Length: 142
Image (cartoon, rainbow, N blue to C red):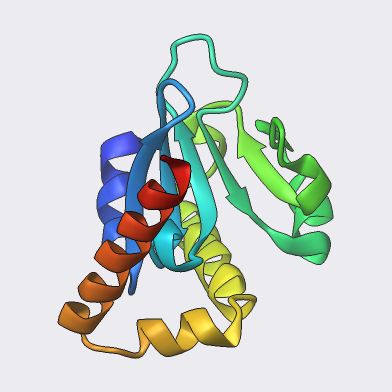
C-alpha cells in the first residue's frame, strides 16, 4: 500500500472527510470537523516523518500492534492509543484496509449522538449544516 491507495480506500468509507493540516499532513475524519466529526487517521507526507501513517487503534489493539516491526506509538497521539507505521510496508495491503476500517468504525462509534444524527441526514442537509457551522465559527473569530 502507499499513500494514494490508502487515501482512495479511506475516501470510499462512509462519511469520511479529508483535510490538509499541520504542515504536510492528510487528516481523515468521520464527519466534517465543523459539525463535530473526529479524526481517525493521519498520513504524514514529509520526507523526514517518524511515521508515514497513524491511526486510532484503541487500547486493546494498540498494545498488540506495537509488538510488530515497523509499528510504533503514533507521534502526538500515542496517549489516545493511536499506532504509527514507520513505513508503508510495515503492513500488508489487506492489513492496512483492516486496521483503517477498524479505526473508522471505532471513531464512528464514539461520536456524540448529535453528530451521529447529522451523519444520518442526506448529504444536502449535512452540507447546509456544515456551511452554517463554518460561518458561525468565522463570525465568532472576528
